[in-house]
Length: 283
Image 1 (cartoon, helix red, strand yellow):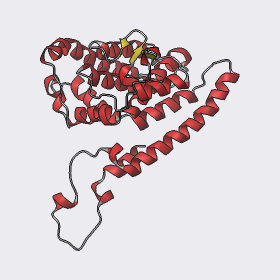
Image 2 (cartoon, rainbow, N blue to C red):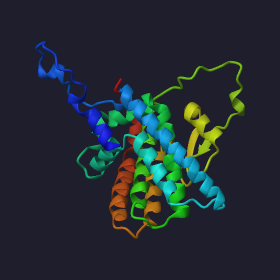
Image 3 (spheres, helix red, strand yellow):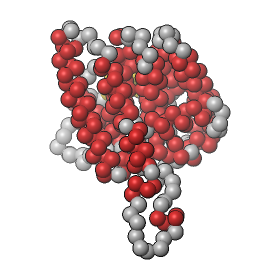
């Protein structure tokens, strides 16, 4: 995944030499590359997700034969989706910079990483909602079927930061309105108003959330709505609790320290953000 994204981020990947004299700035533009906006990358990502879906169907049949017991391969499948669907590099960079004090909280909305995340929630909204479903189910799997594997703390850390980033964008004002046409003949009062992200859901509910998630709450056990004003902080606290049960590996302590510091920052500044109505739309 990272090799593919690195390829598309390289300026020379899309440069076609010509006889016409060009300045370096014109020939090789600098700045952040919006990967979902590149058709070839988007097609590759969709194909990769389709392959993972096929593997997951096989895994589900194995789970059914085991009376619902999820084997460790399932966690790898959820992690793979998270890495494919969420801008984890930007999310991790923003979180670690804030936790380490390298970036001031008041300046975060102007950071390149935040603007990339905001764009992900706004313009890649269907993939963003699908990613938080896999993030939630990652927490479900680790809580119930942990094998104390070395990659479990990293999986929880990845999932928690994805939920935090998604909830943070929405808690600063809904960044996107549903682009689906609203039919006057459809009674939406009969449709579910929420989804439990950290519990297994049927495919129909998952597809409904991916399509119409702007009108549904994404709930996590011990958190409630992750997009509520206190949702991002509560997600981070729950992440620390989950990681504390994975103490067999030393990296859990490092992840807990980052999430705890980030939760403290959110707690200290959430009231001020609501009063100021902080929001930056890069568009």
